[in-house]
Image (tube, rainbow, N blue to C red; front, side, top):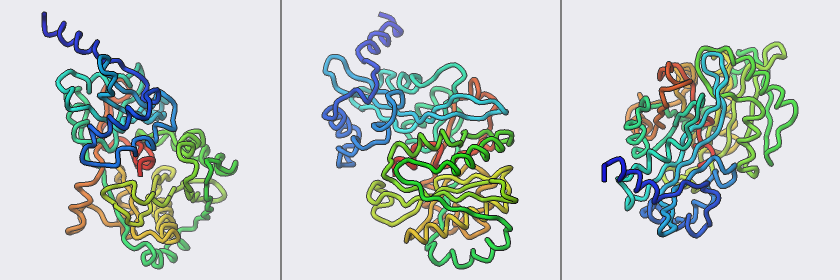
Length: 356
């Protein structure tokens, strides 16, 4: 039997199925094998993809034993690249049972999300997923910037004067139950339309995208702040309090996540004002720190200008550098001509916000 025939035989021993079609008992059993050092294993049942459409998570099942041996999830979206709209998927969770290694199962799972004209990317993936992506010819990995504002309750005091000088009108919305006010939907769509011509490739961020995002965990409260200049919406920021205990690294530290930050044409005044408003929101939520991750230089400059700590900071910077999400993409089709500094990604682009 040739090597190709052997691989085909091994592949036929495993069925590709929608992960949401797998019963809870087998999912927990799979988690106990791939997360053996990270109990409780039942937390796989509260994963974001369990609340999404079946196409968001694929699994491989060993047909002889009916055991789940692989899982890969993908967050659906649309990306604007070179002024054109493309369907996209951001690869998120990626696990292979080590007892079934050496059978090209990881490659099969990752490629199950590929389709003509679809942009495949990943933001915040494991070292194992990075290794698989590299072997498949993905571009990267590149490090994003993880930035932190310690003690927002103190930092917000110095921001009040800056906000007054920005000459912007800010309007806040607390969104819970997955329902957005019509005025907020209209503003998000207006900002999304205006940013479509911006040079950097980015995920589309209109009302439909946020409606999907908010539907995954409708019990969560997201705090939107929209910036206006001359009554025209020109940017927004989204902040929420992280769910205590969901992150092993964060433990039970009270933290606020800046899920997304957008300004038309990356206006630095707007970015700084919105970031300052996010800090104030984190203070209102009694968070000990505020977190933001980004690939964009404009974001890094704006946050650094108002006191966010980055990887350049002594001691703490090393921790931020080690925990900063990495990103990669498939350099074919829509992603063929992209460069690492030619795209903007934040927590909102992947499932990081949904996971934490």
